[in-house]
Image 1 (cartoon, rainbow, N blue to C red):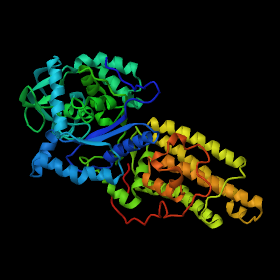
Image 2: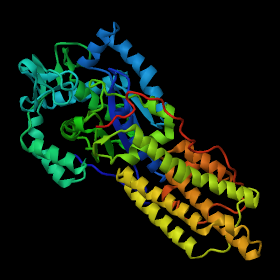
Image 3: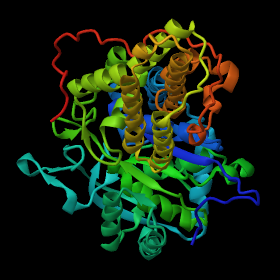
Image 4: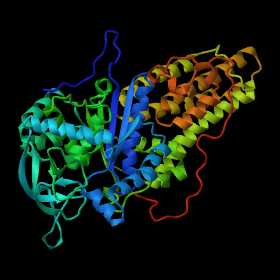
Length: 545
């Protein structure tokens, strides 16, 4: 069985990159909040690992073949390639730039670096006897690009059968296809799942896949012959390769499969595939079986995030519930957007978005708790010490408590973020924000400042140094989530000349106390999270069930 896992050299250093992927997204329309949710999660995860000093590779991209794309292009009076080029250039890539997504590569399945390698992979399977010719008749959902199991279909009007995901009528298709011997891999997959219990997460997703595979797998149709928008089957160009076989292989072709062996071995397989739960089976069943069949290593983890819900249904263009991320970033800002969805919703579970909840969290957690903390500390250093950070010479029990709490917060946040529990990681960080606010309230530096004695001034200096040093740690911890805001805070603390670039600060070392030097120039810059303007009444203002 193909091996998985991370290798280390004799010095204990990681030999391959920490490789994270998002799904490659269909370009039948512009991206909505659901797409951005997964992509931002991947960005935060990889930024966190980069800031641990690890070698990282983050991949996203677009899925551009298949019947759905072909029909969308035809409906818009352009060729499929023209449609894909337009959407990628005008919508997908600009959104990831807008959201500060720091992906290392963007793969398009119409690129030659992908199409050539897909043909080679499939040809290898065919040569090994893993693919045979046959016929198939059954219900097909074009929106899912998937043949459906009849028992999974919903009953519609006039006897129609509906796709359970898109609630649209399926089409009955009958055509000649080539098939991959997926049925032979059921026992191998179950053995692999047993040996690697963390391969599928969360637990609900793992249980779903186990139940599905235990029922017995059917051989998989891997070609279509009734349309031509796809990669030709190399030994029979009357067929095109099934879009999901094409799409899954992006995770290999983008990192050098068949073209750059050194890069491939230094990156593949993915450590984490982030997927929506509606495409879980493709990634947790078909993909590892394909890799096993071609003697390639299996990914480390497939993590299925939940759906963003609107009116009790999955957010999607087909359900007319897609919300453009810019509708939120225009009002709340990009960093608040990145923060909100990972803080408000447990990653891996379904969650409803609410404009009111976003507004409340923005005001309470970001503006009041965090932003106001930064403003208060900078203002007091400016007022009492003319902007020069004083030395801490009168530490007491309160400072010890705060330092111990920081050590714990960093350890918890590091564990949680690496486990993709973003909500738990942010809970730990913002729990510390509240402690620092409480510390300032209890120590009352504005009252201590009235004591002109040496002891009084030493105590004031210690309180403000402790507060600023806490903010230094918070800037590091929050940088993967809110990079623009964290950089502003870093600059205001005068940290850059003394400690170097923020992105180079290891998150796991942020609890090491005393890194900000006395004398650093602290400035009160622009408010990190300005007061929200009143939002005019809008029909989609509340978007939860």
